[in-house]
Image: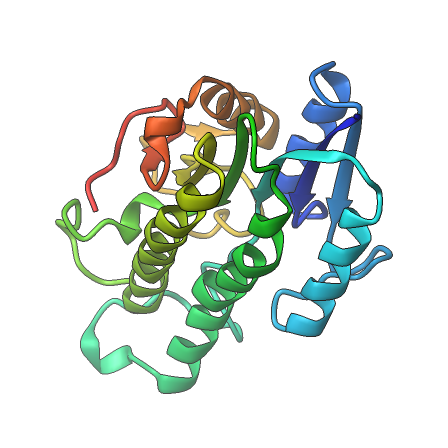
Length: 229
Protein backbone atom coordinates (compact mmCIF):
# COMPACT_ATOMS: atom_id res chain seq x y z
CA UNK A 1 0.00 0.00 0.00
CA UNK A 2 1.26 3.48 -0.83
CA UNK A 3 2.89 5.52 1.92
CA UNK A 4 1.29 8.91 2.52
CA UNK A 5 2.56 12.10 4.19
CA UNK A 6 0.29 15.04 5.04
CA UNK A 7 1.35 18.64 5.68
CA UNK A 8 -1.30 20.84 7.30
CA UNK A 9 -0.74 24.55 6.80
CA UNK A 10 1.02 23.91 3.50
CA UNK A 11 0.63 27.52 2.28
CA UNK A 12 2.73 28.90 5.15
CA UNK A 13 6.48 29.44 5.04
CA UNK A 14 7.47 26.32 6.97
CA UNK A 15 4.58 24.21 5.69
CA UNK A 16 5.35 24.98 2.07
CA UNK A 17 9.02 24.12 2.56
CA UNK A 18 8.11 20.87 4.31
CA UNK A 19 5.82 19.87 1.48
CA UNK A 20 8.52 20.61 -1.10
CA UNK A 21 11.20 18.65 0.76
CA UNK A 22 8.89 15.68 1.25
CA UNK A 23 7.99 15.64 -2.43
CA UNK A 24 11.66 15.86 -3.38
CA UNK A 25 12.43 12.84 -1.22
CA UNK A 26 11.61 9.23 -1.95
CA UNK A 27 10.25 8.08 1.39
CA UNK A 28 6.56 8.69 0.56
CA UNK A 29 4.55 7.77 -2.50
CA UNK A 30 2.09 10.63 -1.93
CA UNK A 31 2.57 13.98 -0.21
CA UNK A 32 -0.60 15.95 0.48
CA UNK A 33 -0.84 19.61 1.43
CA UNK A 34 -3.90 20.91 3.29
CA UNK A 35 -4.71 24.56 3.92
CA UNK A 36 -7.51 27.15 3.86
CA UNK A 37 -7.13 27.99 0.18
CA UNK A 38 -6.94 24.71 -1.69
CA UNK A 39 -9.50 21.94 -2.06
CA UNK A 40 -10.39 20.33 0.25
CA UNK A 41 -10.27 23.43 2.43
CA UNK A 42 -9.04 22.95 5.96
CA UNK A 43 -9.81 25.85 8.30
CA UNK A 44 -8.20 25.40 11.70
CA UNK A 45 -11.10 27.28 13.30
CA UNK A 46 -13.79 25.15 11.69
CA UNK A 47 -14.06 21.57 12.94
CA UNK A 48 -16.38 20.54 10.12
CA UNK A 49 -13.69 21.43 7.57
CA UNK A 50 -11.06 19.50 9.54
CA UNK A 51 -13.30 16.44 9.71
CA UNK A 52 -14.06 16.69 5.99
CA UNK A 53 -10.38 17.03 5.06
CA UNK A 54 -9.48 14.04 7.23
CA UNK A 55 -12.21 12.02 5.52
CA UNK A 56 -10.84 13.00 2.12
CA UNK A 57 -7.36 11.83 3.13
CA UNK A 58 -8.75 8.56 4.48
CA UNK A 59 -10.58 7.88 1.21
CA UNK A 60 -7.27 7.85 -0.66
CA UNK A 61 -6.68 4.37 0.79
CA UNK A 62 -2.98 4.87 1.55
CA UNK A 63 -1.09 4.25 4.79
CA UNK A 64 -0.72 7.63 6.47
CA UNK A 65 2.72 7.45 8.02
CA UNK A 66 3.40 11.15 8.63
CA UNK A 67 1.21 14.12 9.52
CA UNK A 68 2.89 17.47 10.21
CA UNK A 69 0.84 20.33 11.58
CA UNK A 70 2.66 23.50 10.51
CA UNK A 71 -0.07 25.91 11.63
CA UNK A 72 0.11 28.49 14.40
CA UNK A 73 0.13 32.21 15.01
CA UNK A 74 2.28 34.56 17.06
CA UNK A 75 0.03 37.55 16.63
CA UNK A 76 -3.73 37.58 16.20
CA UNK A 77 -6.06 40.41 15.23
CA UNK A 78 -3.05 42.62 14.58
CA UNK A 79 -1.97 42.56 18.25
CA UNK A 80 1.67 42.47 19.27
CA UNK A 81 2.84 40.02 21.94
CA UNK A 82 2.16 41.38 25.41
CA UNK A 83 5.05 42.78 27.41
CA UNK A 84 3.14 43.05 30.70
CA UNK A 85 0.00 41.90 32.49
CA UNK A 86 -1.77 45.18 31.79
CA UNK A 87 -1.67 44.40 28.07
CA UNK A 88 -3.59 41.11 28.38
CA UNK A 89 -6.77 41.24 26.31
CA UNK A 90 -9.39 38.48 26.66
CA UNK A 91 -10.26 38.46 22.97
CA UNK A 92 -6.61 38.23 21.95
CA UNK A 93 -6.04 35.48 24.51
CA UNK A 94 -9.01 33.45 23.31
CA UNK A 95 -7.94 33.79 19.68
CA UNK A 96 -4.41 32.63 20.52
CA UNK A 97 -5.81 29.55 22.21
CA UNK A 98 -8.11 28.90 19.24
CA UNK A 99 -5.24 28.99 16.75
CA UNK A 100 -2.40 27.48 18.76
CA UNK A 101 -4.18 24.93 20.96
CA UNK A 102 -7.81 24.22 20.08
CA UNK A 103 -7.21 23.97 16.34
CA UNK A 104 -4.31 21.51 16.68
CA UNK A 105 -6.33 19.53 19.25
CA UNK A 106 -9.05 19.11 16.62
CA UNK A 107 -6.43 18.03 14.11
CA UNK A 108 -5.32 15.32 16.53
CA UNK A 109 -8.94 14.34 17.12
CA UNK A 110 -9.54 13.69 13.42
CA UNK A 111 -6.10 12.72 12.07
CA UNK A 112 -4.58 10.53 14.80
CA UNK A 113 -7.22 7.82 14.22
CA UNK A 114 -6.05 7.64 10.59
CA UNK A 115 -2.55 6.45 11.55
CA UNK A 116 -2.00 2.70 11.08
CA UNK A 117 -2.24 0.54 14.17
CA UNK A 118 0.85 -1.40 13.15
CA UNK A 119 4.28 0.01 12.30
CA UNK A 120 5.91 3.39 12.79
CA UNK A 121 3.96 6.58 12.10
CA UNK A 122 4.39 10.17 13.25
CA UNK A 123 2.12 13.09 14.05
CA UNK A 124 4.10 16.26 14.75
CA UNK A 125 2.78 19.71 15.58
CA UNK A 126 4.89 22.86 15.63
CA UNK A 127 5.07 24.26 19.13
CA UNK A 128 7.56 26.85 20.43
CA UNK A 129 10.29 26.93 23.04
CA UNK A 130 8.56 29.91 24.67
CA UNK A 131 5.72 27.51 25.46
CA UNK A 132 8.03 25.76 27.92
CA UNK A 133 7.15 26.65 31.51
CA UNK A 134 10.46 25.35 32.81
CA UNK A 135 12.46 27.36 30.27
CA UNK A 136 10.62 30.65 30.81
CA UNK A 137 13.19 33.14 32.10
CA UNK A 138 12.00 36.36 30.48
CA UNK A 139 8.23 36.53 30.96
CA UNK A 140 5.94 38.44 28.60
CA UNK A 141 4.21 37.09 25.50
CA UNK A 142 1.38 35.81 27.68
CA UNK A 143 -1.07 34.61 25.03
CA UNK A 144 1.52 32.93 22.83
CA UNK A 145 3.37 31.28 25.71
CA UNK A 146 0.19 30.04 27.37
CA UNK A 147 -1.43 28.76 24.19
CA UNK A 148 1.69 26.83 23.20
CA UNK A 149 1.99 25.42 26.74
CA UNK A 150 -1.61 24.25 26.37
CA UNK A 151 -0.72 22.67 23.03
CA UNK A 152 2.14 20.75 24.66
CA UNK A 153 -0.23 19.33 27.28
CA UNK A 154 -2.73 18.33 24.61
CA UNK A 155 0.03 16.54 22.67
CA UNK A 156 1.20 14.67 25.76
CA UNK A 157 -2.33 13.59 26.65
CA UNK A 158 -3.24 12.53 23.11
CA UNK A 159 0.01 10.59 22.82
CA UNK A 160 -0.86 8.50 25.87
CA UNK A 161 -4.25 7.60 24.45
CA UNK A 162 -2.83 6.88 21.00
CA UNK A 163 -0.18 4.51 22.38
CA UNK A 164 -2.89 2.13 23.56
CA UNK A 165 -4.09 1.56 19.99
CA UNK A 166 -0.92 2.12 17.96
CA UNK A 167 2.12 1.29 20.13
CA UNK A 168 4.67 2.24 17.45
CA UNK A 169 3.06 5.59 16.62
CA UNK A 170 4.70 8.82 17.75
CA UNK A 171 2.92 12.07 18.61
CA UNK A 172 5.22 14.99 19.42
CA UNK A 173 5.47 18.75 19.78
CA UNK A 174 8.40 20.27 17.90
CA UNK A 175 10.09 23.66 18.20
CA UNK A 176 11.34 24.58 14.70
CA UNK A 177 13.75 27.29 15.84
CA UNK A 178 13.54 30.87 14.63
CA UNK A 179 12.54 30.81 10.98
CA UNK A 180 12.46 33.78 8.63
CA UNK A 181 8.78 34.12 7.76
CA UNK A 182 6.29 37.00 7.90
CA UNK A 183 5.35 35.71 11.37
CA UNK A 184 8.83 36.39 12.79
CA UNK A 185 10.06 39.34 10.73
CA UNK A 186 9.09 41.93 13.35
CA UNK A 187 10.33 39.97 16.36
CA UNK A 188 13.59 38.25 15.43
CA UNK A 189 16.35 39.79 17.55
CA UNK A 190 19.90 40.31 16.39
CA UNK A 191 22.15 37.46 17.38
CA UNK A 192 19.51 34.78 16.92
CA UNK A 193 20.17 31.87 14.60
CA UNK A 194 17.50 32.69 12.03
CA UNK A 195 16.91 29.95 9.45
CA UNK A 196 15.25 29.99 6.08
CA UNK A 197 12.10 27.87 5.77
CA UNK A 198 14.12 25.43 3.64
CA UNK A 199 16.77 25.03 6.34
CA UNK A 200 14.10 24.59 9.00
CA UNK A 201 12.27 21.98 6.93
CA UNK A 202 15.45 19.92 6.50
CA UNK A 203 16.11 19.94 10.26
CA UNK A 204 12.50 19.17 11.16
CA UNK A 205 12.34 16.19 8.83
CA UNK A 206 15.71 14.94 10.05
CA UNK A 207 14.42 14.96 13.63
CA UNK A 208 11.17 13.27 12.66
CA UNK A 209 13.01 10.51 10.80
CA UNK A 210 15.14 9.68 13.83
CA UNK A 211 12.47 9.65 16.54
CA UNK A 212 11.80 6.29 18.16
CA UNK A 213 8.54 5.15 19.79
CA UNK A 214 9.84 6.09 23.24
CA UNK A 215 9.78 9.72 22.03
CA UNK A 216 5.98 9.56 21.95
CA UNK A 217 4.46 12.49 23.83
CA UNK A 218 7.73 14.44 23.87
CA UNK A 219 8.65 18.07 23.23
CA UNK A 220 11.75 18.49 21.05
CA UNK A 221 13.70 21.23 19.33
CA UNK A 222 14.93 21.27 15.74
CA UNK A 223 18.14 19.54 16.82
CA UNK A 224 16.26 16.61 18.31
CA UNK A 225 16.97 17.66 21.91
CA UNK A 226 14.24 17.49 24.54
CA UNK A 227 12.82 20.76 25.83
CA UNK A 228 11.59 20.94 29.46
CA UNK A 229 7.86 21.23 29.92
